[in-house]
Length: 173
Image 1 (tube, helix red, strand yellow):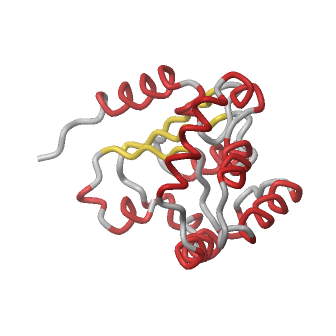
Image 2 (cartoon, one colour; image 1 turned 90 degrees about the vertical axis):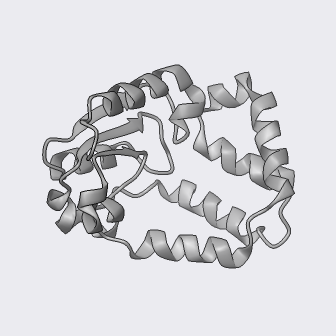
């Protein structure tokens, strides 16, 4: 969002996946999800594969966890090779808490696709409607029955949506 707002001449097409506008207009996750994230953040100094798995369980649907535990285990193992540091997570958290593009979203000039999963508990799907309403001419694609990591749960549908949208964006000069 900031790139498209601050450097419009460099952005022809924009895909916003499972995100929000920040600030007070954001639809927040449920308190129990926020609490679980807080618990996981407290463990970041001593990360474990189980901690990483718990995060991914919030990011996908329970059905995906059941079907693809092998995939999540591989992702957790990869994450343990270079676990996030507390300072890095603190900066990310501060950025999430402090950004607010709501009032500036109408200034996005790039053709925009907003894509979101219906069962995203980290960034509720209602945020997609806010973005779609605020960004002139934007398109909305809702991916049914998936969580925050919609591109893991329905990779073919996600790839088709994004590549189809980007193919429709005129190339820059």
